[in-house]
Length: 145
Image 1: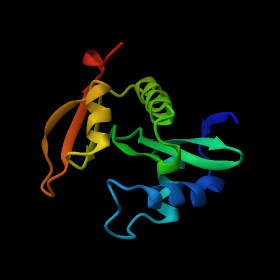
Image 2: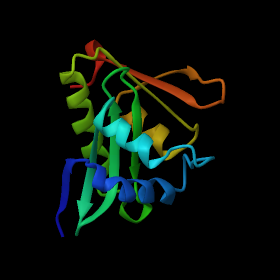
Image 3: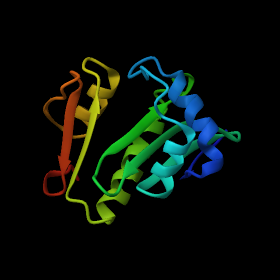
Image 4: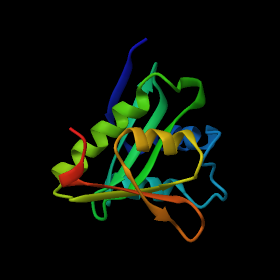
């Protein structure tokens, strides 16, 4: 089975929502992210990518080209530790940098695999959000090679 990385389409929204709901960490606390929100994020404010395996979305990432926010990066727990997250991360960042952004940012829960993932990828902690999440940022001039 070959995992294919490709740009996300609106037809991928159901798979994206399924993966987002399947995670064990950084769990959505509400149903606030609608299908329309995902479509807006991948078609209007930025771009999304999916990892597809046998026609099924198993991981996805979405980056906002207007403000540099990493809107989402999630891997179905059944497909973790296969490099999908890093492939998505690197593809998304390359695209965001190509859009002229000089600073990227994201938030994630403390003490999670996501925190360790972003630290290993060279992101810098910039404090906490009012809700207690960690704030990370990456500057173009300080990004890892």
